[in-house]
Amino acid sequence: MDDIDQLNRPSFIEEWAWIGLWDDPKSWKGVMGSDSNSWRWSATGSTSTTGYHNLVTDFRFARETCVFTDISGQWLDAGCSVIYYFICYTGKETFFSYLAMIENEEENRNVTTVRRGHEAWIGLYRGPWMWSDGSNSFFRNWISWALDNQYNRQHCVTDHPDHRWDDQDCSVQGHFICQGGKTNLNSLRNLSDC
View 1 (tube, rainbow, N blue to C red):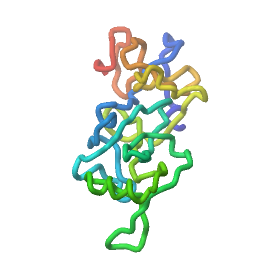
View 2: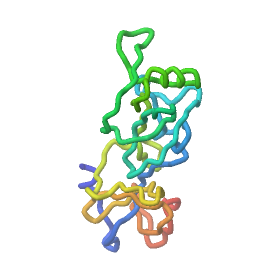
View 3: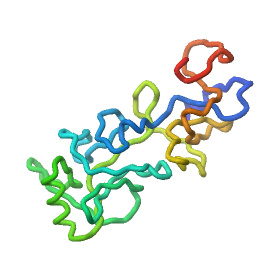
View 4: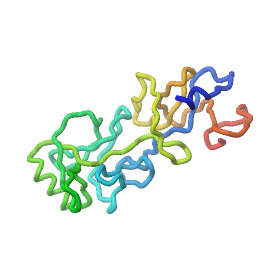
């Protein structure tokens, strides 16, 4: 909130403006990428070591950041507060249990067998929304009705005059706010000019 309190919007920006927060679908949509907002295993906090997945994602309502396996063994994204069974394993070097990590087809079949016909959480999650410099964003200031990922195309973030955020289609033209330096904002046309 300190950063937001210090944010000076130019006076000509009376509506929403782009900020450098976005969620790159190439990092998570049907792939096991390696960017800061890619899918990770909860036991290690790391991305997949093999790249194996059985993942179908839609990030519906821009809130589906955890993964469960359905009765066929397919992995689907869902909101993390949904109640499902869960599949755990005990690490070889510890006595702690973790949500299942699945790194190949054989492990996926084993999980399917253990589930006994129930949908169940596995240990795959992701932290959406990263800054344009690739760093993670842990702060959120969403408008209460925001985050609808309308038409599955809203992967960029806008700041409204009251400094609350909304998701928006990245191809929509509008004003934007850059960090640092002095720039003639009237001459800038898109985020790549920042």
